[in-house]
Length: 156
Image 1 (tube, rainbow, N blue to C red):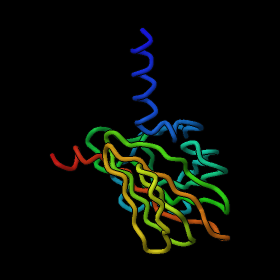
Image 2 (image 1 turned 180 degrees about the vertical axis):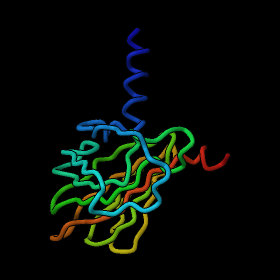
Image 3 (image 1 turned 60 degrees about the vertical axis):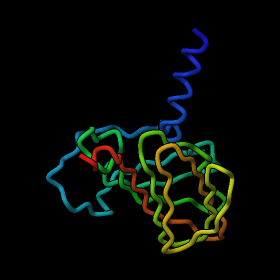
């Protein structure tokens, strides 16, 4: 029984439990919408995302709580890490997580612990089986687009 509980807990942690806290109300995704105005996006802010520090501020076109198996993109959002904030190291089992840095300066950490400085125009990705983290290393907010995709649904 202990092994079953441990396996279940590990699966939850590896599948993105970093985002489980303070989940927004999931209204059904309207797939007829093709333009999402930033002003109309849903707010979803989290503290200590992925075991990181401080607040992660988010505005989302839609979240993973609104999508299904047929959707290639599971989540699209504008995220901001204020000065000193970070997203902790977390893994992805069945999706890809991409950060497109818009402004600010940060440090991206991969699953092996390698740190890479990132700034405006840089793109990071964690593929299935990989881990990543991001921290604001500057004096200004670190602003980035977050795209979570399910590669299996895109292959069909």
